[in-house]
Image 1: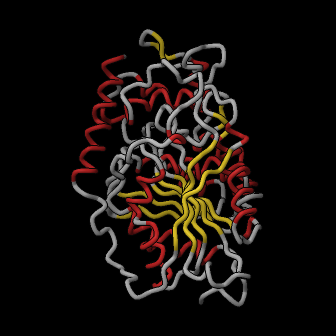
Image 2: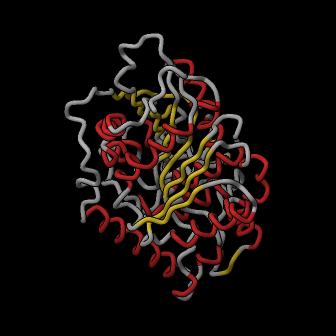
Length: 381
């Protein structure tokens, strides 16, 4: 058991290191907005009542990065749609801001014809390297934080169009999982979804045991995140509460993935100091815990949320043809098709991280530019 988990962890870390070494951040997109109007980036903290009292001890005051489009500082009465973007596992929001080259990429998309939108990226790095954007007494209610606390704060502090028709939810890897998970449950908040290279679509705890190579490709673990490691941790990206003090936190990054998923999907307030249950014990699957993992899989959940998903104006998914998460994303595409849920799905040439920035600029932002509701006289044709 231990050797199999260590093997999976080692592979993940090696792939992560490779993704960093080959430089996926280098010129994923060549579009320049040198002579175009510039937007601005603000870094704020947003308190999450939904995260208060989490047993991990993570702070409920989260770092959030906000991109404001070029006209925001001048058109004082104008209001804007908002796109929320959820980052992947093992790194914080600043790593994705750097990878996406956020301001320049958004400026370039606008220069190429996309409409101006506010972009909001919350930090979900936790003591176990990622929240899984789930609802758990151990991690806190990240579903509530994203769909209520964060949206309410942004609507009350920025000139947004405070209506579901003008809100989009998106993310990459763990953030793609969060997009589908939260999206299924909150069509009253968002009207369009874009999930990039989603992880964790089928959380099969039996994969914690040794399996033949032929059984892989629909894995439950997040794939290696493409950004480089973030700078030194900030207070909001490290655990400060008593539950975190003096406790082992694993190897960091992907060394924490089993703990992160267990904390999100199998919390146990009566099992200190980790406050979660593992899906295996002495090399044997624990059936009830394994069932909890499966219950948090979008491929299992989707049949229950057909009416909710049919309320969306548009749903888009994509994944690289060399991404190890490709098979599970194809399975979700087939499930949505089987259930009659309108959506688009693209499998493009690439891996888990080498085209994220280009697709953010050339696919994700134009998608929301077309699908969200803008002020009639302001929307670009």
